[in-house]
Amino acid sequence: MTSGISSDYGDNPAVFGIADSSPAFDSGIPNTSIILSITDDTGTYETNSLSDFFDNITHCGTYSVTYNYKGTIETKNVVLGTFIYKVMAGSPADNKHIFSGSMLYSITKIIGSDRNPSEDEEEVIIGSHLDFSKFMSSTQPNDNVRIKWFEYKDGELDTTAQVTTVTLGDKNGVGYLGITTNTAGFGFTTPNNTIAKGIDPFNGRDTVDQKLYGLLSFVGNAFGGYSPVPEATHWWYDSNILPDDVFWVVMSLIFWIFWLNLVLGITNALPAVPFDGGFLFMGGLSFILEKFGMKDDEKRESFVERIGTAVTYVTLAMVVLVILVMVI
Image (cartoon, rainbow, N blue to C red; front, side, top):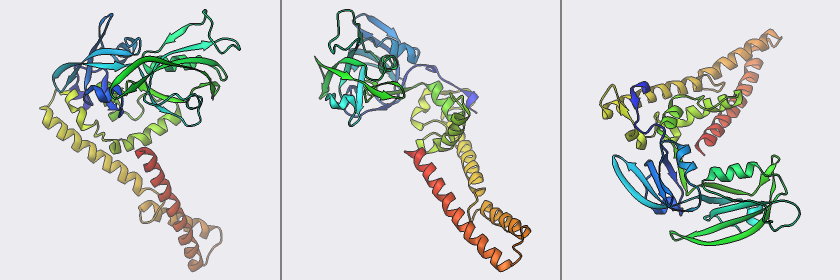
């Protein structure tokens, strides 16, 4: 069925999540908007892919963002850059009083023991959060870095730079600052990535453990609104085989029939009473015990019932934990 849909904005950045009290939130750009272009002092840049969008955010500042929302194209001024969404308690950033809700401006790696950078040390201007991730991947534990950031309050960016020098911690052998970032408070996907997530449990997963986790996550997609894609994103796509409204009704019906059959089938096979898998487990255990010399039927069945009850509780507890992990 999904081969019968297409999108004119397949690889364009699509807003899929907006952080509270962020430039994204204050911009008024609606969730699920498709970003078409951004403009700064150097020119206008089309954003035909996520990489186009992130590459053309070269600094923290105000940009004009043109977007499509359900067929209406508008332009709004937005503060774009690396938004500090969260500061981990007790981290190097927290100890230096770098606050969540701020915007990163630049980072300079300090070479040597002097905690003040020399003229030869390059100040790296941070644009999107990918620039920040790239910089951090080049650092090591105990590196000293000078950080500049701007405060963002009440919808306004204060371009008076706050400056501090931080000694990085250790996270798997790489420098650790202790902040969670995104670009201006936006979460992004693309129409193509969204449909791939909705139909392919192994999308973007290479190793065996990643594929197994992908399979579990795929079953849990329904808890995240995927049926097979969130209803709010239906307008991203055009149906080539049925009218759009009819197509999504049929698609959702097929999805839920598939999902319920899959989940019920797996659940029914669990070694827990009253599922069929539980009775098969207890019957098999009784058969094995009889073959190993436990001939007393009453004693054997009593033992099997106790084991079956214990396994049932353990299995149900594991199921609850898996569901909680997928939902959270």
